[in-house]
Every structure is written in structure tokens, then in C-alpha cells.
Amino acid sequence: TGNNADRLSRQHVTGCEPSMKARSAVVGSGVTAAAAVLGNVFVGKEALSWFRGLRAPRFQLPMPGFVSVAAAYYVIMAVVLARGIDRRDAGAIAWAVAVLAGNEAWNGLLFGRRSPRAAFVGVLAFLVPLGGLQRSVWPDKHSRWILLPYTTYLIAYDVPWAYRLWRLNASRGG
Image 1: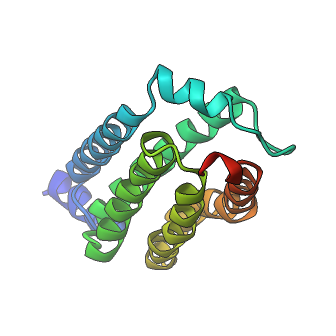
Image 2: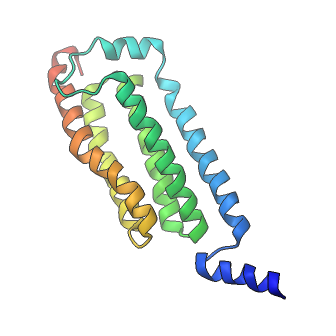
């Protein structure tokens, strides 16, 4: 009937049932929040104190800047993951989970191991899943444009920052 036709029309336009978007948003947000909690286990007061004691690159963001980027990253990842779930795009979902895991592993390298060198190598390795995710979402213009600023930030800021942090602190075993 009319209601059923409307539902089918929305399904045809969006590629999924209307209720699927809400479920996808809940799952995407839940997975992203869980990754954030697990990854920040390594970032305690002692680790932050160690980090503040490092020689910082001149262009290092202040701590509120790092927090803002992290918050934006988690929102971006929740949206990209939810859209991948909506599209039933196994590649995008797998790459998104790999990016979330890689980002949290990076926290372990810098704050858990307290190693700027390992963090630099880790950020270079992180380019693989992030590049895979960016490539996998390219056909979805919304995910593409949501993720692209973070990908650009990582290449233009994080890689040079991690390299400089390592070099400035190489004498500290890092």
C-alpha cells in the first residue's frame, strides 16, 4: 500500500531500510567508542607527564588541539563506519576497524612503550589502513569528504610531527 511504497522508495534511494541507518549509527558509534576507551588505557597521568617532558616540535599543537583532533577523528570514524554498515560494504567496514585498531595501537607505541621512534614508525604503518579506508570509501561521496580532511591532517601534520618528536628525543632512547 502507500506506506509500503514509501518505505520501498526510501530503500531504493538509500540502499537500506530506514531503521538500518539508526542501527548502523548505534553500531558504528559503539565500536568507535569502545576503541577510544581501550586505546586510551595507555594514556594515564604518568604517561601524560612523560609526554609533557619530551622536547616538542615548534609546530606541536597545544594539548586542547590534540583533544579536538581526537574528538573529530572519533566522530569521523563513527560516521564512516556507520555508512559502511549501511551500504553493507565489507571492505569499508574492515578498513574502518583496522584504522580504529591501528590508531589505538599507536597510543600504545607512544604512551605505553614511551617511544617516539616507535610512534613515528607506527604512524607510517598507519598510512596503510588509512589509505585503504580512504580508497574503499571513495565511491561514497559523503564518506569520502568526511574522511579526507583527517587523511590530509595525518599526512600533512602527524607524519612530520611524529618524525620531529622522535628526532628531538632520540637521545632519550626514543
